[in-house]
Image (cartoon, rainbow, N blue to C red; front, top):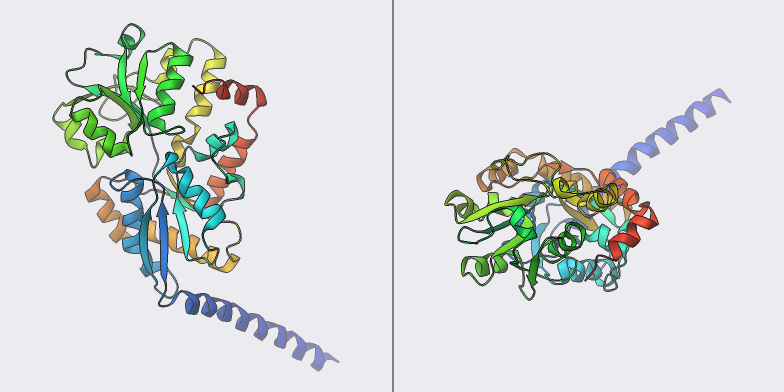
Length: 339
């Protein structure tokens, strides 16, 4: 009996040792010679696009089977088009994941009708970087500071409902009594920046990262002037620029601002749709984490002045669940801000 017990135990142990490599081999065999698409819900040249392309350049070295990675841009409706495609249409075979707007979870909470995806069910891969929203004007603008926005109109560019460029000015008008005038119709942030340089618009509210990377010359040469930002603490290169929170007159307003800018720490999030096999999802997550820790990627990120700090999928899921638990009164107040 003892001999049989020892034999049985040894059999179980050997079987367990065999199963794990077999599973790993299956993932390796599946991805070998394949191509993985990274769908980016923003236009070419945006920080999401730059981050996605940098990821694609290095991720094959960390993925079982060494598949090629290809970025597919799918801009439109503040990345809602991309989210709907990944969630509802794209194959669930582990050969596609995507990057969507950091504002998408909060848009889902307030009930964006065109969004046909539930962020609470996203299979998060991870996130890179952080974000700060800034509002800025052309150097020649008569608006010299944030306080001028209470007495002067400022024409800014918008890129669609749900985008920071469109929703933030509208929210600041209603919450703080500022006087932004949003001109819609721009395809993306880069397109709106071109309009700013051509004096078609006088200002813009968008992510700070592009102004420190691809459009750094606008700041370096003094062609634009920062007037507002979304952090509670000072931002680099502009410690004297006030925060949106500095103009909040009551606790209700502060709570609403906190909800609106809760996604700042979300960075550039990546997710796979529900239904991707657990072992392939695990491989994607591990490869994403390994890629962001890769010295070669970080060296490229430093040259590009692009923040590629890793954030795990568990943190993104916790963030979404926290947003989903937002008190209904706050959500109702946010919904009433919509133009």
